[in-house]
Length: 79
Image (cartoon, rainbow, N blue to C red; front, side, top):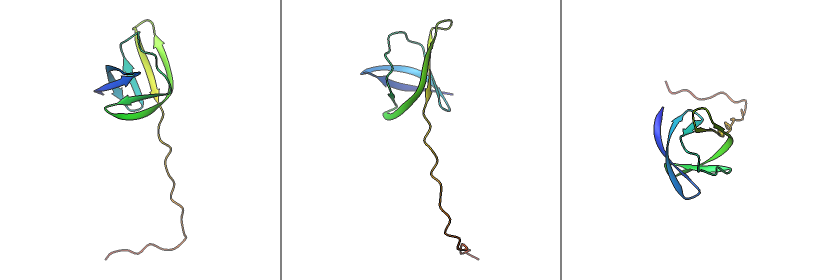
């Protein structure tokens, strides 16, 4: 886990970032479809407010892996 700077709607917050999860302790943020983490725009997959701990838990969308297409030719090795 690391602490990151998050910008949501022009406001800056500190948050904990671990894998694809972001945890922020704020009630005032209106979270839309993307957030800016350390200057990089990241899409939001889901979000919910945990009233017990008074934190927002944001699940960040992960990039889909690009798959290489095989050309069925053997690769050349460097010996």
